[in-house]
Amino acid sequence: MHDRNLIELASLSRNFSYAPYSTFKVGTALLASNGKVYTGCNIESASYTPTNCAERTAFFKAISEGVTTFEAIAIVGGFDDAQTDCCYPCGVCLQVMAEFCEPDFKIILVDRDEHLNVYRLDALLPYRFGPTHLKLKGVSSE
Image (tube, helix red, strand yellow):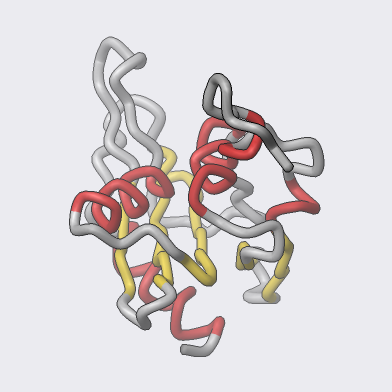
């Protein structure tokens, strides 16, 4: 799937955002290694803590269906219906990506001029903490 197609799907999923408090709507399209695309939107809560980002919504949808390997994610966002400059994933979402994605996982962002900005996960989270840091007790790493 082309990067622009993922951006289009992310833009469409943004329409489902529930953001009455911040009015900052985010949509994502997550490409799994099996070729299936999972979309997500941000979902706010009046008490803020239970709010869920669009990226995690897409990841959790995929993972809940047994899919745990991914190729790329497109992210779009902005206030109300306006596209903002690149909408970078937050630290929590990057950590979820680090749990399930390789360092070269592609993160596709678009700016208000419709230019694509493509990053690798390891560029946005260079010193990630992941599953390899948690070794089973008593199991050798050799």
